[in-house]
Amino acid sequence: MAFWLAFTYMLRAPARWLGCRAIAVGTVGLLLVGSAPVAQAQDVRVRIFDRLSPRQVELVSSRRIPVHTSPERAPLFHIEPGSIAQLSLHRGDVRIEHGSHRVAASTLYLSAPSRAATTLRTAGAQRSYTGAFEIRPDGATLEVVNAVPLEQYVASVVASEYGLDDVEGAKAMAVVARTYAVRGSDKFDGAYTHVDHTISQVYRGLSTITEASRAAAQATAGEVLTYNSHLIEAVYFSSSGGHTANNENVWDASEELPYLRGRQDPYDSVAPHHTWQTSVSRAAVLRGLERQFGGSVRGFYLGDTSPSGRLLTLELLRPSGAREPVEAGAFRRAVNRAAGREVLRSTWFEARRQGSRYVFDGRGYGHGVGMSQWGAHGMAQAGRSYRDILAFYYQGATLTQLDNADRPPAQLALDDTAPEEPPPASSASTRSRSGRIGW
Image (tube, rainbow, N blue to C red):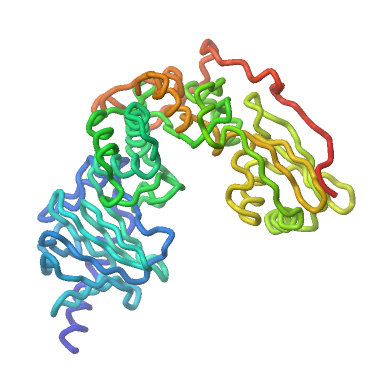
């Protein structure tokens, strides 16, 4: 016991300093030098099990894995193939237990051999991954970061995000997923560039990869989308409902990007959510709005729409008769949290009261900016190539190799000469409706 405490103490000070979140992280991954290169420049750094908030993780590898407290140091010991290592929280550190080894540190680095499959189990979930791992405490949970080779990541994302049975649409999805992955995100604090769910892209490791998704990644290996040589914001969604959206009409703070212009989308007609209708309890909707926006809500009015037909705003009806404007995306999220995630599948909808319920008639699924996955499927079925699909949904973007792309995002201005498809005849560019929906 005395030896254990002394050994733990000796490890802590240097491990805390080397394992802190001030370590420099590049857009794609972390290139670490020294005796244990944990991640390579073409790796994607993904926080896995993010929504499960793990407190303990079991790890089993198909290969021998060295365990480090810093990338520059020799390994403390190795996890033997087929054996189990236990990771847990211990007095503000992460602790690993394997055979006779007990080590606690601020960060642990597990540099698995290339292509080795490592199985992790936590909170009822079991998944296999390739690549290296960094594990550190994050409050009362473990932060587990997988530095996964780029093309393995792309194959896994395509399998999870695009489960449709066509070749060209899957290839388009591979290019989009790769571009999104490499461009990175500033949503997180630098310890990783993505999470493993829809805040970034859905990534479930090796077990989800199919022959089709692997083939799509291999057929497009290294290909990304750029605009003026800079990696684009490669956003995508499920179904357009017949018209995609301008990025600035969906995300207010974003500048107008010429490759994210709304346009009519006839290919999306194959989507099961191309049009939809839902009926939901009025009381549940109003409770959700009150929980999100505070105060008492008696009903709501539909507000202005964008050129694509999607709502920009709605107005909450207060007991005093006052009408409070709210952003359409926030309205949608509030309703879906209270009444079900598919009640409002997009912000393109009409609404009416029917007794004690609200009926919503809508179009599309998702935010509407960039590539419609069902539209890509429709284009593939119509005989279009993945290059055609990408050119349709990201107008003016260039398909190129990653080595030719500039990673820093460009400060882009709207190209006034770029053509934009007219909105559907049924919607004006900013249309306001005053009919009260509920009271």
